[in-house]
Image (cartoon, rainbow, N blue to C red):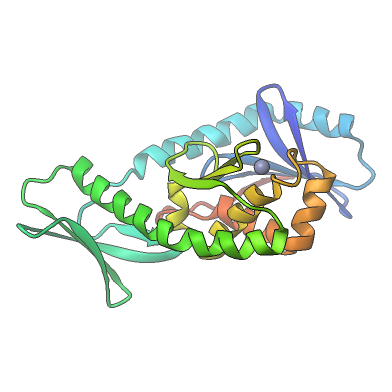
Length: 242
Ligand SMILES: [Zn+2]
């Protein structure tokens, strides 16, 4: 896979043994992916994308507005994801300490104070997500440090708008997106592997891809899953155009 930039648009291009071009815009962030015939050169692909720019922007705007509409209120009955599994939120108001408990593999019981605001409820949930991630990450890092033969000096979890993870190569520090707590665990693992491989190769070049193929042959499936995984009930079929 190749990453190319057209104007201010970044997109993934995959060359395959196919006859036609396929263009897809994927939720939740409006990622653009083009599958092109093996024989097609980069300039022709670029021209094709330019001819579809208006359409692409329109699809991306659609996702952006759906994203706003589906913003969480943290009230009972909403569905929320934990490690890729969907649960129903059950808000329990009372005097007990705020906290979160998964019950009957079905519910997320969210304990909050009587007068809690949406923001406070969100904060309790996000703190719980953060603690879960912080329990999961160390053993995954240890496992992959050994396999890849690198060592991170520090890691952390934070909310990021556009990236699943990042790596400061000089300081050997990796950051992981708090949103990963909602994703299947192998997606979290994929992001960790990706960031650790950056300690061997800075750029997303052929060498980087070769390392990914070697250490985690399934990586591109996990990547697609991560970027296409829908975080709520809205039916987001990938938008296809030929
Ligand atoms: Zn990267």
